Image 1 (cartoon, rainbow, N blue to C red):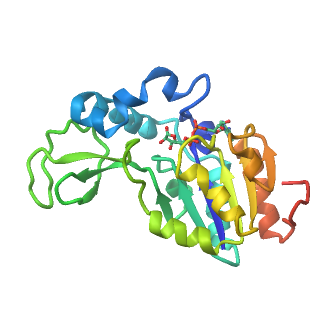
Image 2: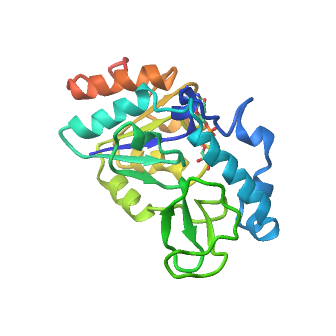
Length: 240
Ligand code: APR
């Protein structure tokens, strides 16, 4: 089994911004004002506006999967063993590229969730917090289906089981700043499993990976996938 973890860097060449770095979203907005559950209680309109802007960006006409997303969909379809795709991204670019099973541990920007009953539904319009739940009919109950900073990530049971079983862990386009995702590499490495970083630049936890390759995801991810599918991805081979 292979576990792949993706982050904002894989969608950068698709036209979506990353969070950190010079053009990152956190240069323009403060996490504690737009992306925590206390911000949601204190100033819900501001959190909703921020989430509405991220949803609009995902849906903007120029945004589309890039060769890295397509390569991972191909890997899932053609690899001999199971490929578990875990993403921190709230965009739907893995799905648009053809990936069928994607564990969105930080939620999904194009979905809303009922605060009362937990019902999740597709949602592509702006969300204002005044919307009723279509399932349990609770009033003003819908919120973005996005995990805020002090909330528990989703699918952690499935992810931990996959981390316990995998023989290769690959991290793509993530800075290693946010836990628990940033800690996955150390959990897997403790079992002696190969761990590979594919990123534009060394991440914060570069030292925890057994191998690393740097460059734009649209170039290095298809190369990596070709090597896995042709059986050439030997450990420490020195090449993607
Ligand atoms: N190809 C590969 N990697 C890239 C590219 C590219 N074209 N462009 C940027 N990167 C790399 C950056 O070098 C950086 O290391 O992607 C990484 C993006 O890091 P972050 O912006 O921190 O994104 P991510 O790691 O996904 O953030 C984790 O933080 O704010 C939260 O919930 C948000 O899910 C997000 C989490």
